[in-house]
Image (cartoon, rainbow, N blue to C red):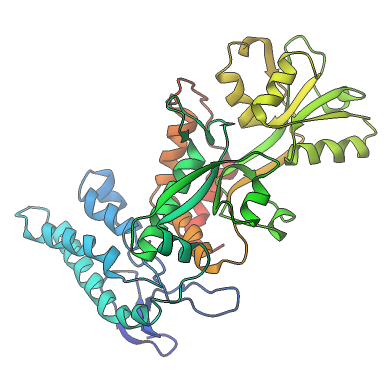
Length: 402
């Protein structure tokens, strides 16, 4: 019993749940910016004890439900919306004649915890049913959330052969919207809105879009204006140049024309480095990444400064890929995140919880494999292994609340 908790459930080894303020918490409840305990589930069903079962192909559906179904449950909303599939799943496991007695015992525990969660949390959720705000209120009332996408940020956010947005960031945004739908207790569809590097921030702050699903750098300066998910990728600014170019390092750029996409941290890095090292760069600001590449292709610039993964993505899909190369030196490091409106704590909790659960279940690693290592739906293959920095960030993500 902790902090005056009432009616604690100790049903799963290594997990402590307690009733407090009419809701269930584990040992690490979520705290909002005002210092209040948010009445929602914080990882109701631990996933890690079942990794061996999943690896062996046992109980996959039960573990999948446990890893995702309860994680998207939260105030305000009715908990049975997410818990019911797990109760049904657990009961179905119990009803099967199977030699896997250990798995059946696990199923029994899930049923007991799920039922206990419903009875304990129902009063608080019922009281808060009308207290939605921000993006969740809009989702509840309209059944839609708006998501910004990029047209040429391969493999994060770009147009597939059908003309619809696809990519690593797109899939993460879909998971966030699914979690929001469970939170508000209704189906929520996505309204896709094209954005550029220059108008994406205004699109978020003006309310034109609720999420920006692209390749946007998450830094302290930008977080004064907008909010970001936990880091989903770590990139760095490099240079793309013609293969015959003598440009190999930063100092080789002195007096040169360099193109970069307007409104990006790549432009900021060029401006900062030009001033610091007196490079006298002539910076050309393109509308988007595809436009910047075309400027270089047609001889309008000596080099194209962009995030390394995007440069490799552009080259992989270009018939001119053999004519250009990417330099070795980094000009800056850029962590990416999913962008959303600042000052919306309910939606922020959904975004952060979704990313933590994608990391804990290793779904984020699977998405990385799909979009950075495997052949893409449009035919390209980047073959870009996950960096040590991103591996560590994903490993630590479930252990802390952003």
